[in-house]
Image (cartoon, rainbow, N blue to C red):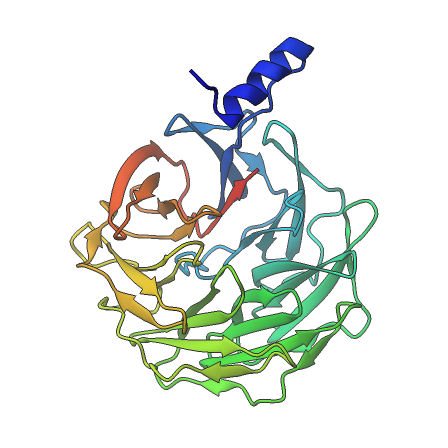
Length: 369
């Protein structure tokens, strides 16, 4: 009997007295912005969600209570090398070091930003060997730009902040040189080119406006070629991201029928595999819907099958793992976190569910390492 590659590698490691390589792990972090801002951490072990030792962690900052945006604020993000976790609150961006055991340590000086700014979305990109962080200042109608310093602190860049419409909420960086910002109050979508020094330059095309504002959120595919915005009480619109200058080109298929009655608190999960998932914040039945949307090579989204019940009364936040194999969903009213396996045709199979002691879990990120 011949041995496969993995078996031969393990046998060789044993003969040489070396430790076998550790398997990949999946960590899920959830931000609760209720009366006290805290971050919860879970590890997916053998298909079960297990709390990380030390969880939850106090953000040490007043929360942004009342910002119930069902996860579309995108209040959590990872830096490019997945060493730091970023969370937003009323007064700025908090930086967390992620330990080998998945535990979090708050960086001294957090939060960084303008006190009372009402920060919501946060993203990070790596350019020319430097890590930059961008946060939407909802009340100030601007985006604040930072660089991660030598001690993991955030240092605001010269030229920051940048004006970004009325009520900038969610952001994505589909390519490391483009930033896309969705402003909720005026229903606009605008993009910026990111320079090597982190500076932002507005794209040559004017912001795109939507009649069905407020915009619920914006997401991108893993390759950074397309972005999609969910329009409050309306359909989904897709755009191709141009490499030169970061301009957004509307797809011919717009508007896209998501086969889901999206409301102002609904939105989309980021695409990490074949499917994007649309989520309805609440439907009055205690079983808020999820809809699988298959992505074509041209960026078009097409509903696959019927709506699938989440088993939750209100969906707050949702996100996929890096390979698009699992979808994680949080609920505020029923206070739980659910892990679903994504099947071949987009069907969701419940894998595990745990009680989540959180009133407003509107941020969720998945770390595979």
